[in-house]
Image 1 (cartoon, rainbow, N blue to C red):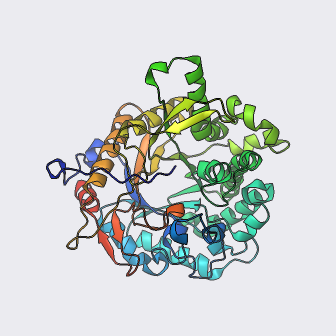
Image 2: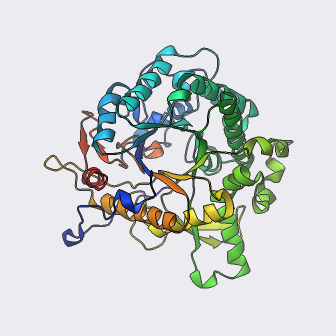
Image 3: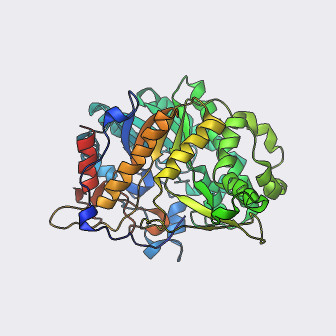
Length: 461
């Protein structure tokens, strides 16, 4: 999921300064918002938060660019009022945030940190004061270190502790939240972090992968049960989905390439979609993982596949796949020749449209879909008090138009959240990759809305 390519130069004559859509182009009551995540913006060193596995991961040489961590981040813990003003002033309808498990329960269980819970009290109330719908994600990767110490997402007990955390948030905030997502991007939590080793805990182990891919969905299911028991609704999950295409287009119909695409989709999309919507994992994945799965995993599938009220999809890119004869999962991944973001990810709005169509047709049917993250990293600089991120402006515009086309073609689209409101801590890339609508000077914490922010604000006026 990473790369180091810089963005292409955009000729001045090709620069646009406004979005090409209006609210009327989207379905009635369509929700526009911006998204963030706790560890990436709040400041882990504030408010009595306990240590999380990203702290230890970042403190290990070679894991994170320049060894940077989320100790200060964007100091959102102290600056949230002004940051929410930026959301409101952009004419957005909602704000997607996450609750930091290690802030509320520093040991992952037991004694609640009252100061941490009070922060989310004040944060949600401040959203409501600004007439912003609070979209809460319970878990966006800040696993308490105490939970990591007992095996993290390889340990079924952690799924029970997570359900307890969900119950605490549900009881305390649930009646004020517009929507609740259980987990953000289970693919990243499991496969990226336990097979590819790019995120905390940084493992490269197939057995750990199989168990984490199952237990992160069991955590979702158990949290759903806990929230339902409180009488809460508007519950869902956020999946990062990837559009998969063959590298060799001429070989698309060959059995070998069809098998490769089936495996690529199974790894990136169908394991999670299948588990949640059909109570079943793809056979092509189980061929490689079954011997590593926990005993009796099949018994968990009814919990995992219980009904949801909405689905969140995060989309960033397409990838091209080709077969290999090496070890499981038997494919190679590459990118094509389209312009790329600072992450090295191809800019391909058509992939968002295709992903939405595929998901609705194969899995979610009439369930409302929110794009809960979509955005791009760019090497943004402040020049004369402004940030001319016109490539991001075009990126957002083109992807929102893809959402509008999907809605026109029958996909039940309910909302779009830009990633991200602020430049922030971009995990293994530290503070180098900037995704924000708003530029953050990490030395002074000064916020500077970018051209994309102003264009989005005008389009939504």
